[in-house]
Length: 260
Image (cartoon, rainbow, N blue to C red; front, side, top):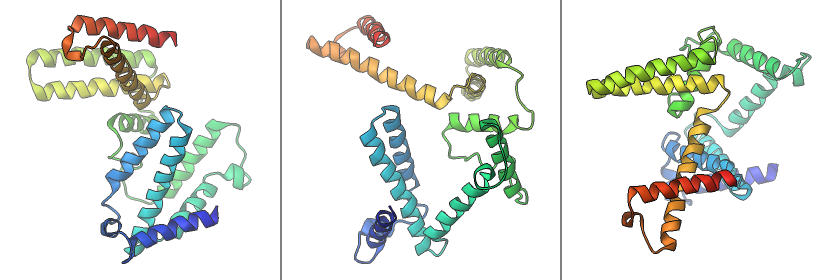
């Protein structure tokens, strides 16, 4: 494995060299973050589909980006790949005293509590926001969930799921008022509040909101493609039929889906 990893590093250094690739040479530590995000989402798709071959390929792309960023940082005299590896090695050992030290735990909850305490101790001398560790670049639903979990640790949270559900209904009522009023900015504000409240509900029910919406999108695509397939069997396209016919096929797709 060490030789394989070393070869990857050398390949990337070659690509960055004067004899290498112009595109790779032109990149810097900050220029390919969108490419990294694309690879991360492609890995999520592969995981959702349980496509082992594709999971392997996408993990390779993620590792490539980690090494590529490290090599670029090294070229810019910011830090080296050894710095990156040493830091994560030390962090993992430090945050698992029950494995690498003498501390004992009684289960996963103890591990999480210890992790958070150690992490807080590491960062206590940093003058940063309370919400440090919740990246601004997170997808909005994921960020909302992280923000809620962050404040929960200091007691700022709903008492139960029923309270969360009541808040959703309250926010929806305010959204209806905004729609009736016709003020676009107010509508956007209240729609955001509904989404944030729904994330609270999902958190209390231990459902990942990003995962729920991702699966919903997947169902939508599958059902709509089912409509297209059935129409094509008759030599028809979407434009050839009424909304009622498409709705009938949509419900048929749901029935097929539920019987699988």
